[in-house]
Every structure is written in structure tokens, then in C-alpha cells.
Image (cartoon, rainbow, N blue to C red; front, side, top):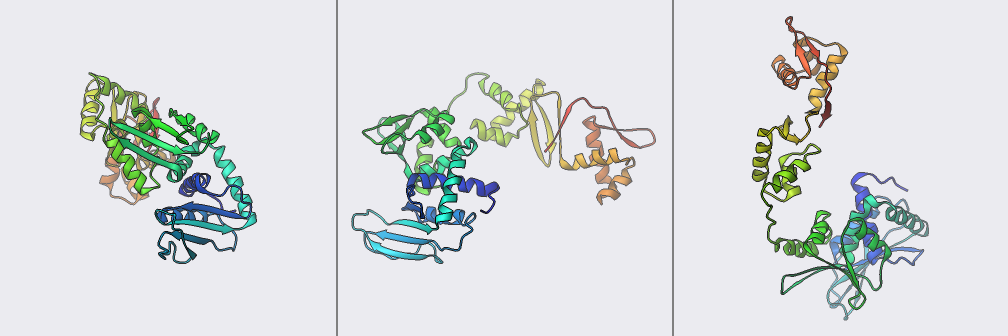
Length: 343
């Protein structure tokens, strides 16, 4: 079993969702995945190959109403078939390996038990079984097709605090209401399927922008900077222009309710008086002071920069009241009771 880390871990979670939606869960001999999107077949294959340790080669079965022969992945053997009932081509990805199928089902169980992976699993599931419906009277609906109630899907939606109804007649979960749809947008629920994602974003853009009451945006910004954030991050989080957010932050700073720290040409904002934010470079200067360096030229020699550069960094730390310089022009650390955060 190859180790799964970082971005690959997310991709495997998405594949778990794809497989739970459109894979053959009964087979103990083959890992299969069916979809009409060539991009998703490629995505599934590339992710699975990150963890597959066997020697067997996958196969693709392509079905189309006109028997048109278009390979999905060049290096993989593709069998072509005619299916006159199909509205458009669809593909079945198959990988035969009894040992790996057993391992894959173990992986699926682990991901189903890991709530942190729920958003990514839902992205995969939605790519297979999700759809978007819009119509007259400002109807905006997201559906997740299921023949009967699915306990795991309900666990995910409950975890994300998304309200839903199950329609036995419509054989699907029904999600409506701006608040619920915005939660789905926050996790990019439709991102894996280009067509569905385009329809979903178009539906969300049809909503009019929310208008905050007097002082409401200022309070939201103040609450949001409980952890250090940039104006760009706040703009995305609160869905307001960066210029608007910057004006609010400036006013909060004038009222001494917000504080900013310059780190690598970015301003990080916080509502705490007991935080100082510095860069990794400034942290190195503090560490060097602890090692015994005192003169500006000693820092420039250690970090292989000009003395002016070292002096600028030290003076910036001095403004933050983290270091001081005595009459003999020697630098030293100052006593500090505030929390120093390195970004």
C-alpha cells in the first residue's frame, strides 16, 4: 500500500465519493467506476494509480449511441460498444485485483470514519449523483439522486449543517434555501464536474448580494480577525470587495480595535492586543540574538546580506518592542509578555 499524503489524500477522498456514487460496491474482484465524463475517468485513474501497488492493468469500456471510438486514456486498453439507449457516451473503468479491492474497501471505511474528509467525499459523490435545478419563481434546488435513504450521505450533510429533505417520489435528497446552498458553495461541492460546477455557480450568482445593516459588517470583520487574516482572506470570507474590507479595517485601526503587522509585503490583521506577528526572517534574527550575536555586521555576515538589510530588520523588530539597541550600538532582546506568531 503506497502512503497517501497531502493533496493525494484529498484526491483519494474524492475518489471514495465517486466510487460510492457510481462504483460496484458488491464486487470483490474488480474496482469499477462508471461515468459519462472523460475528465472524471482520467481523474479517478490518476488518483488510484497513486496508491495501487499491483501489476494488473486497468481497462476502459466505452459505450456510445453511435459506436464512436474515442479513447479516454491513450495508454489504457479501451473496448468500444454500441448502446442505442444511451443519450451520450459513458465509460466504465475496471481494475481487476482481488487483493487491492479488499484494501480499497478498507480505505473507504477509513475515509467514511474521518469527518475531516467529508467535504471532499461529498465533492466526489456529487460529481456522480448530484444535479442542479433552476426554474421559474426563483427556484434554486440541489439534488443528490438516491433510490432510498442513504445514512452516510445524511451524516455528511448533518456534519456540514446543511438542511435537506428526502423525496421518495423523486428518489433524491432535496436541498434548497440560500443558507444551505451557500454552505455547499463554501466546500466547492460541484468542483469535480465542470458542467455541474458551471450550473451551480450560475445559480449562486443569481442571488442578490446580502446587505449588512449599520455596523454589522464592522462587527463581522472584528469577529473574523480573532485569528490573523489578510484583507484578501476577509474579502473572500465575507463576500465583499477587498477595498470595502480595507476601509473597515482602517476605521477599526483608528478606533484601536484592530492591529496590523506587515509580513512579506502582506498586512495581517488581528483584534488582539497581546499578539505580535513576524516573518520567518525576523524569527531568525531573534534566534541569532539568543545565540549571542550583538553587532549589526555580525547579523549581515551570518545571513550573507548587506549591513543595511540587517539594520532594517533589526529596527523593524525594535519598533515591535522585541529588541533594543544600547549606547554602544549592541542589540539585545527585550522582555516580552505578548504572544509572537510566525507566519
